[in-house]
Length: 146
Image (cartoon, rainbow, N blue to C red; front, side, top):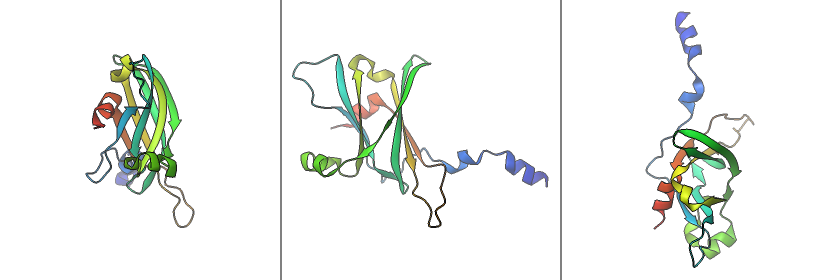
């Protein structure tokens, strides 16, 4: 009985959610969308993350802005799978979900991104509550684009 009580004290969500990417995942990246000929202070940033991780699909993205260790702003945006038009323009986006936001380029090193993935309903219609998550620094994602 005491082991059952100990087991109930463990937060199961921590055991069910994964944050470590596996080696077969597409490499996420970020880039300036339609960069101007002259560098601008505010640019549109495209975030490209794998559409599927561990059989779960990208559903949302949290963007957190830090000033040192202090969280200054956090927002959530949706992710959209690259569609046929996106792929026709740039075939390399196949398999990615894309999100866009605007940012003062001097703040790239202060932004962290968390991507949330959701599993599809089970065969009997049940829901799996905890999907994988991936955490990134925007500066690292900007460096990933070759």
